[in-house]
Length: 413
Image (cartoon, rainbow, N blue to C red; front, side, top):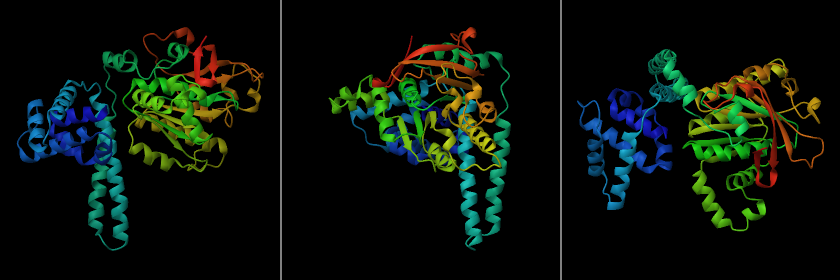
């Protein structure tokens, strides 16, 4: 959990706390992680009281918490376990956490600029106040740019980009070919209608959600969101719809135990705008982001349709860099109808623009006989590094897999 890493950094370095504390989304943390929220408050109280101290150790944090909150024995044990966990947490990528805090800082400053500019226009605030906050924003941009310099340490690069696994696929074929999905990775699947694109997503995210403490954020503007939610239930539990509804209370509890309510489906229509998506991502903790269908996202203008699509896919790539890996869904063109092994030129709406922005692309083909349960996966682009168990011969490989729509899962053959 990134909040635990932030708390540990704030305890270790007062300078980081002073710079970034007011930009942490405290209201979101309060609603979702009450004890974590209280620890942020305690750290603030501690540094305000002991102004000459530059860090907080574990016992000081526990004592300050106990001094501010009256706890029973069970709550005290829970607190001690939480603090032990935080101080045992290894901040594996210090720069990435600081970069996340810096991005939140810049966004907050940008919002302040917009509000103060309106006050200046209405005569409520002086232009000097706007210049002051704008100067802070320019300074934050310089700091952020400097922080993006890549650490040229080969062992570190190997550990973070290959050895340390990201989100693993349910389908072993994809683990052996693409490998893990990590922050910054952007790719998309494409297929003809009624091939099983939504089932593919449900199958994979239901496996990935149990590998992370972050949220699976699914922006849905294809089929009805309630239907997508039912497929996610089936995929997580491996149950048919009939079995799912046979014992609703039990299956609800089991689903929540496995997912911790971290699958969040936002049901948009085709008027959904990128700005609305940005606003949602700021207030969540994404570990994986789904765009189904990405081509329908609005808010981008260009002289030609292919250039507008290129802008959408460029934006999605930036989303992946800023928040979490992105899986998008696109249609295959008419020439893919009845084809088993789809190729990159069968992506609908663009021969180059969309494909050029992706790190990986997966085509899903099927036989014209709609009763067949065989699907044909073909990796048409792969720029991912993979994992230690990734097989080089499968980087641009293909495989037949089994679709089980009744339980919303794909299986290896």
